Length: 411
Image (tube, rainbow, N blue to C red; front, side):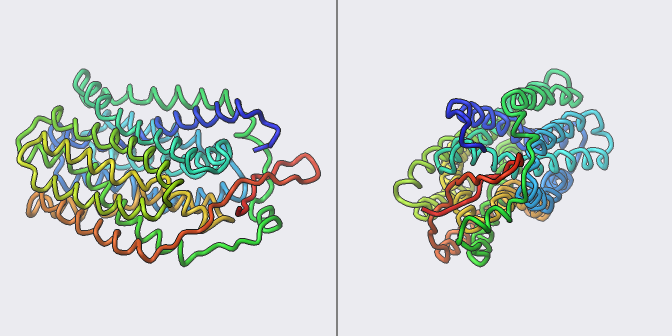
């Protein structure tokens, strides 16, 4: 982003980007909220609805690093808006074709690819608008939490009023927020950008640490399974164990990301003061306790409270994990964003069908026992990680009229 851009305009872009993040991740939350209705109205099995989660996430986990690479090399900021619109269209159309599982699977897969396309480019834009700080990244991240939190109420409202065909109304957030961001940042979305790796190589001596990034990816894999597994099965757990109605049980899907939003902001603030790794480790350990509380809960109300505690714990390290990934791959910010955010939204979905088969075979409660064990593994693995100085934004001046995406440097 050009250094001559007024701070007020950059702040406006960051806030609107945060709103588009809310709209984008709204569709991730909507998929989870719609699962009980596919079970009740379309008579899908647990394994089948877990397959829908797979559709929303599996292709994302593969595609998102690729979108990150394209964002690094060519800019392509418009991909964030195209992805947002695709994410909304897939979910909006799914209810119209509930009688055909294959069609629903394809539509949700399209939505997942849209989510994948959005994240790397939008994260880079947010990083530029916020100057590369953890605080700015935590604000942008909170947008995602807010979107996921709002999704259950919206999904329940439209399906309750109009049946599964009511999902068509869920396209509204994508259209409105895509238009708003286009108005605010249209010049950045379609600017000419020189290959990022060339600019970075000429302006920083810091090398990418792929080994450290690999270990961070392994830790994030356990986070992803815990996050997606909870989002997919907590409502089904309340329905199966306590015979709650889907509407009542969906409270958990609002509490979880809402508490996550608080955890993201608090964790970003703490990470700037005590370090990212202490916050990460405490969050994972507290997350294990939250999942155990869900397993042992005597009532749905306790499940809601425990799910809120889990949301706080899981999301406290969220912004720090992203900036840590950026510091490990300072010359590949888009790839780092694609893998990191791709895992948080995607990799857990790859495991969801297996968790669904376990739920069908021995009960949903055992899914949460497995999630607690995996998160404990992530906590232990985190001790392999080491801090690295965060990469900061440095605008590169080049002759000619081409713009260059900001390079990174270490202070």
